Length: 65
Image 1 (tube, rainbow, N blue to C red):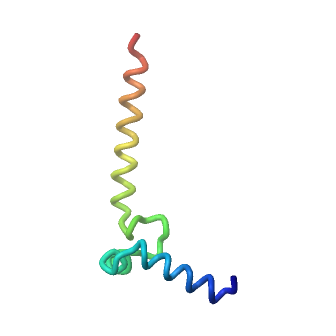
Image 2: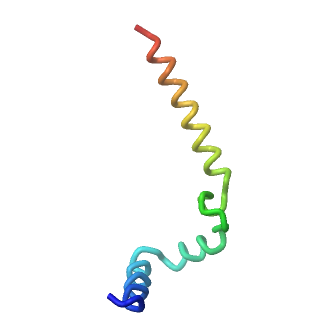
Image 3: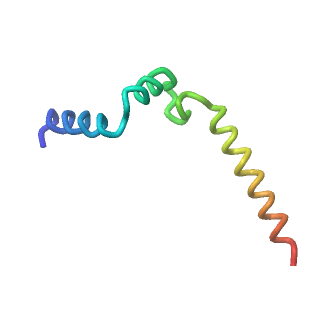
């Protein structure tokens, strides 16, 4: 495939997967920081907190006979 064919194919593929509303949300919320989900560090903070709590719970449960 040529570069132009690749770009065209990718646009067509994305159009089948992403609705116009989803694209608008992405454009509105995306940041330059690729590690932020929709530009929101709060999302990752909440995931980290949940992961830490689950890990602590597993550690507590593993100490029981």
